[in-house]
Length: 219
Image (cartoon, rainbow, N blue to C red; front, side, top):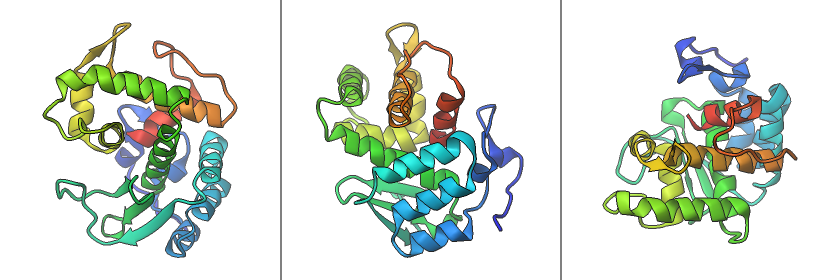
């Protein structure tokens, strides 16, 4: 049985998690699939344990990650040596989860969405690739000394996982009275909406339940 974490851990930025599974320690059935190196199977098990949109997102993401590897390791760090709960490496197409920090459904789903986004970037004609490329290019003058400025893949990786980079992007204005980070979030939300057969939304629109779930996954 999954271990419930504190109420504070289940809320991010004032948004209650849609499904308790995101705020729980990872279910042993999901851990078993991950230990066997079966990322897609782990996500499908998570989808079966979850409800509503969480179930749909986990199951749909699994369909796109059949070739993505997963590794469980101790003391996982990012590129600057800071401990992280998980990371996705696009060069090896591998998600690494940190067993030292306690694995959660939230971390697994966040890294899975990151992996899908990275795969989408390989398709230069995809609408999300075009949006993120334009956003990256327009942001370069403001982040030219920042890790995340060397390539679009690094920009996306840092925007997913680095709170300081997210804060910096939140301070850079974009068109339509929005920020760069808001536009990044909306691009990923629209990618997930397309996976689920839903219409894309403009960046200024109010987030619906699906958008809030993706926001929570990325928080």
